[in-house]
Length: 147
Image (cartoon, rainbow, N blue to C red; front, side, top):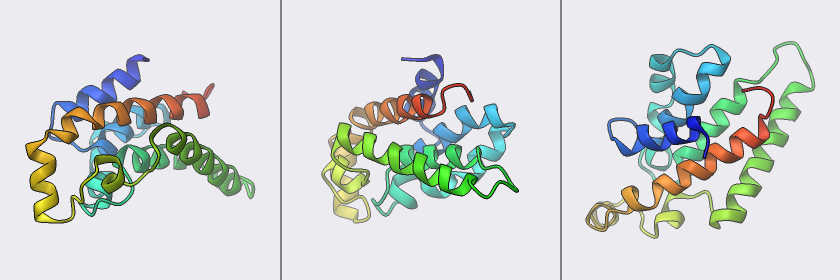
């Protein structure tokens, strides 16, 4: 595991920031994004898009980083980024079966009962570090030479 991937896992595991914030704050630096700004920008994406159990924050954080590669004025840049997002998603699903927090954790975090079970079973502490790690590794593979 790379130093950056380890940092993503550590930042999220320590608490205080969500998985999306951890991804963007670690990899945003390669594109000139200050850590504090990255933490603000990605604040709403944790818990599967604001605690709704939708797209995993490690995934949305990676998408935000991919967006930082956008070249203003280059008409092909958007389609290149969309291609990277699709490839990232394919690889993540191949590894984990889904990009949905609810499916990855097995419980719906958007409900009080689901969140209670997730906390009681320590699922975010047991499952999310592996998701953070693989998201970071996929991102690094896709952005080889740009980081």
